[in-house]
Image 1 (cartoon, helix red, strand yellow):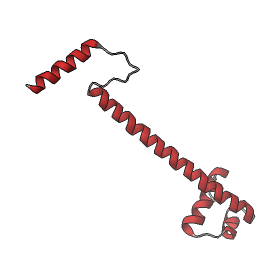
Image 2: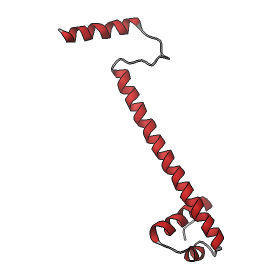
Image 3: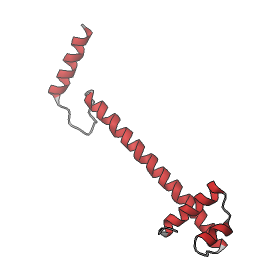
Length: 102
């Protein structure tokens, strides 16, 4: 068996149990003669680790999408309230908008 950290072994146990139908007894043998109670705990902890990682990945994707949208808004002239307003920039945007209406 490859070298895995305990954390990785917990995820392996959860995946083998949930997705491959391995029994806790089989996992105990494969994971180094672990007791049924240890394997049971590892499966639960492995599932939790995977959920946390999935949420972290989802949060990172949303953060990335929000940053993209913020950049797009800025390119359209939007400035967050926390940023000082450049009057000349506002004037320029208004003039451009009025020219588009012609």
